[in-house]
Image 1 (spheres, rainbow, N blue to C red):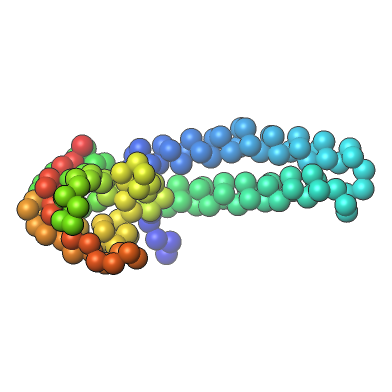
Image 2 (cartoon, rainbow, N blue to C red):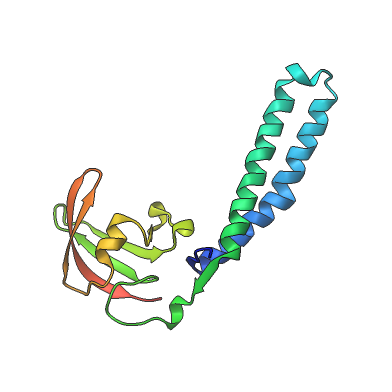
Length: 158
């Protein structure tokens, strides 16, 4: 049995858009680059040809990976979730106990995680520590840089 890949509808749409871009923009560009490189003669010493073929392999592998994830997607409708406990889809406002900085993260699937955009993977150490916690709870997290302590300020679903 293949494992389901949890994701939001927004994450699913982003993966679909990436596949469409790879198929309609990148693949034709690479095919043209390969054709152009072939016109330069001897393929055994043709750097452009080998670079284009390598890019083609990377692009095809990325498309296959994305299609696999989409086929196993378990889309979770966050708009139907509510409560005061942190779970998949929750947006959590935290207070860093060491720096007094406030941070806000949304707990999402691995494929859509992007810390710079405030989205953390459900499998990340921080998300695993937060799961099931409520407002005003102190959470201790082991990170590569050492232990961190956060206070849960708000749990919301939007």
